[in-house]
Amino acid sequence: MDSLADALDLTRALVALETPTGSEGPATDLLARTLDRAGYRTIRQRVSPGRDNLLAFREPPAVVFSTHVDCVPPYVPLSEDDETIRGRGSCDAKGLAAAMVAAAERLAAAGERRIGLLFLVGEENGSDGALAAADLEPRGRFLVNGEPTENRLSIGQKGSLRVDLRATGRAAHSGYPEEGESAIAALLDTIRRMREMSLPHDPLLGASTLNVGVIHGGVAPNVLAPDASAQVLIRTVGPTDGLKSAIRALAAPGVLVTFGPELPYHKGGPVPPGWETTVVSYASDLPFLAAAWGECYQLGPGTIRVAHSDEEHIIKADLLRGVELYARLATDLLARETA
Image (cartoon, rainbow, N blue to C red; front, side):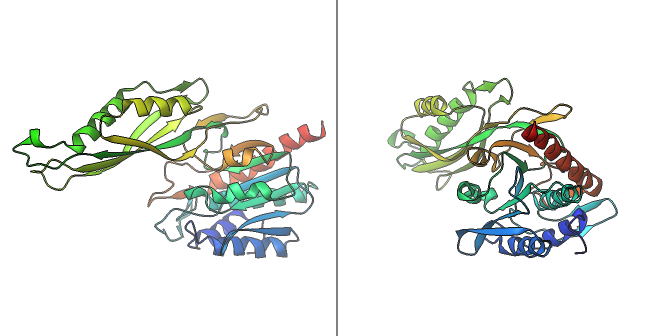
């Protein structure tokens, strides 16, 4: 590509690569080669075989732009028209990676070289890259995480808690139900109680929400089900110890409650004046970066509403506006650094 400042060209190059979680290498390699040639110092951090985080900087950073290079499957190939770039990762989050590089170049051209770039693996499945990045150096005082926030500054995000329900019954002929116990009936009773429970609310993040995403069970319509299971996802807005205790208490006899992966909620740092703000209900790497990387913010062009879909895309004008906003946010934060 002719210039790192061309966010559209870099977006095209990244989206053309198929990099689902676990196979991010081609995107990391492309960014490392490109940034090396441009005079950045690059550090690769092994997360697992064939998978590296990438940290790049010209001078020890005060502000770090960070996003992920992995995508959800299935791959959606690159295409575009006059207004839009389409394809997997165009808005989540390869277009944002390109916008961050272009913003860093814009700032460097104006004499500001204290901008770092941190590209992570694994965000779409457990955030192992973000967790490993706690050991990377040098780190700055501020980090801007790239997720599609429609170019508004996110000041908070909900967490998520997966609830795994497994019911055990006793099979019997459906004509003689008194001789068995239906695992499905116990499972449905538990789910009904969960859906009727009062969920936490936060003044900033809003209400917790609950989704019954997966149900399995039974062997035939004329047999009382000997087993059944479900997975429920709750978008959380605060600590979850009390919520977990309440859910355990709602379980019907024969239903075992366990908890799967949990992503914490996050509330951001002080908002610079003049920014349009939002809160988001999706999870990201941000909470896992906050402890090690200073004050954390979240911003990016594009909308999450098309991410993970066959229609994933980013509007070119929004992407270019994102470059401007990343540069503006870094400038605002650096003014605090030197104040």
